[in-house]
Amino acid sequence: MITGGAGFIGSHVVRLFVNKYPDYRIVNLDALTYAGNLENLWDVEAAHNYIFEKGDITDGEGISRLFETYHFDSVIHLAAESHVDRSIQDPLAFVRTNVMGTCMLLNVCRQQWSKDSGGKLFYHISTDEVYGSLGPTGYFTETTAYDPRSPYSASKAASDHFVMAYYHTYQLPMIISNCSNNYGSHHFPEKLIPLMINNIKNNRPLPVYGKGENVRDWLYVDDHALAIDKIFHHGRVGEKYNIGGFNEWKNIDIVNLLCRIMDKKLGRAEGESAKLISFVKDRPGHDMRYAIDPAKLNRELGWKPSLQFEEGLEKTVDWYLKNEEWVKEVTSGAYQRYYEKQYQK
Ligand code: NAD
Ligand code: TYD
Image (cartoon, rainbow, N blue to C red):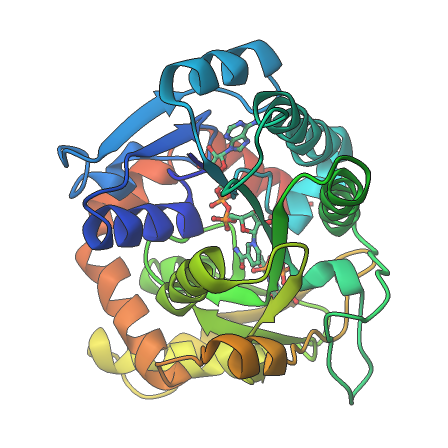
């Protein structure tokens, strides 16, 4: 079972597994919230080894029924509320899905696998944001103390702790990976990179929080999916793995780079898109810097990122320009209300 497979990263993981492992039966459990979209998986939906199940991870009975139908031997858990700004607007939604939902899944796995946990695995997908905020130097390793500072990262940290607790208390076989910021196709346009691409294209202001000095460590989403594949098949049970590509960027530098790429693609004069940059009120509790040390993953499993950032960003821009309908669909209705609340304060 893959949870959250209709979302951004989940859809890349589902596609990779469905295409690469014809002998697996892959069940995608997703509630199809505003962030989930079956269009993300149109190219694999007819595959013989793929099944979609609409359901909520907080519904224990529903998950138990799925276990009775499919007898899952493993769960890759991506379903979550994932946007920091939304967690500031509505923290309890994050407690519900990220904490309660994860606990519900853990509990069902514990019951279902209680007689024989051999060969079973609960693989929990988490974020580097659980480690908090770095100063100008240093990296997050697997042993960095947790120090979450947003309702989103606190809810992910809590879910990580519960996964560890089920391992130590009930010997539930588990692995956790904590990844840095992802970018690529099918990324919901509430997050920095797709939001800026969409606004540049539509000549709308580019809202940079604070001075744009905050640093994020960006990884192409397909490289994350490949890391998940490696860890799922070869990672050691009971371990944590950090995933990142040594690719730190200040927000303002990314926005300027996107403006330059899009000036060229849209046939605009150099510097035209950058005129849209607008510095806005900072995010409350805005973490200054994230940076991952992925040495353990590289050493133990030989994983390293495949794409250079400029190349990945260009591919991403091309995807958004080619898929206007997708953007139009996901940014209609409820998205407009969210956008107004977030940016027109
Ligand atoms: P996303 O918001 O794009 O997708 C989340 C998916 O989960 C959606 O399909 C949604 O419908 C589903 N979902 C939400 N609540 C649900 C519920 N109660 N029951 C069932 N399904 C539900 O998120 P994403 O960016 O793809 O992130 C996936 C996972 O990876 C999350 O756990 C996130 O914390 C983690 N992560 C994300 C990043 C990133 O940069 N996006 C980085 C590191 C880790
Ligand atoms: P985001 O994509 O929301 O990811 P996260 O907060 O999980 O790292 O934001 C990435 C960075 O971009 C973060 O420092 C906040 C900043 N940001 C803006 O400056 N403007 C925006 O409109 C958004 C959405 C983010």
